[in-house]
Length: 436
Image (cartoon, rainbow, N blue to C red; front, top):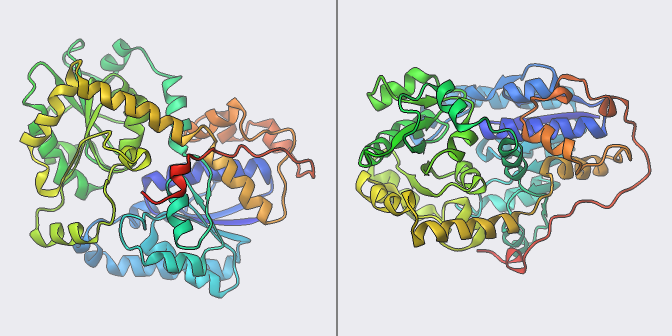
């Protein structure tokens, strides 16, 4: 079968790479073309048509500045869809681009599946109509989305959340704290750490990192370190922070979080990963400082919460400091009780347990791949269970093990069969069938 995948940012690259590996286990002869990043390239063993770094924008001004490039990317995608004629076009989040491509592919009679829903429950709810019209199947990674779409008359499938297995793998392969701080070059090997996660886009980092640092500096008994995004150079962090000695950690965010007393996190997937690791956090998001941006966001946001832990549990598990409420003073005030034993710290840790229960333990990419290939007439090889421990480790590791380099003999020798197995269906709370 021919698969075309579109991922427009770093998190989408990771999740799509896991999906590629899962599809290859079911369909050994699968052929892929894709827009994405290095992880997808490693999984598919070919380069992307366009790297997500050429697609990733944030904010109105950046969209306008890069509009010619974005339009060129869309034309390229349409041309490839028309020439390649994939059996299925698989879209990963990135709605401004992907929904336009979905419309085009649908007009050609090409099957369109969505893996990881756009956050239409937060804003731009009108996009649901487009999804219902142009998308054949949507595979959700957030349990509350089932109820949201049900209210709109559209059935989606919750396949589990990829972060569960990614964190599980990372926590099973932690280096000792001593080795971690030595390898990363921390000046003080014993001082407790505050982790700073300012986002993956340069605009986010520029807006949020200075405020995070100013808050962390109010706790002299702690040192702080920045979890770096893979596509952002170290020099950029130091320039934004105006601190040549800034501790920047690359490629070890889960380890940094595990060995931190608490974290300051920009809203996004990182809030969920921090919660799954079990590190108390303050969630914050600072825009570009323009009043118009703030007013637009406050008007457009449709949800009670913005952080994933709060949305999934439907309660205030972690504090959220947004826009003009995100200041060094407010962050420090919320952070202080989390740095020591306290009722607020205990409340978060208790909420994290509820969060894990709601997410379940299904391997999202495996379940989604099974549903996608089922709809194409393929079946799952009986000798390659989708929920075995090796599968979880392969996907959670971002394709770093031997199976990602083609040494998984089980996958290479597998052939479709008519033998069926029960699917690892995630269990939903009754509350997940209702919109938050």
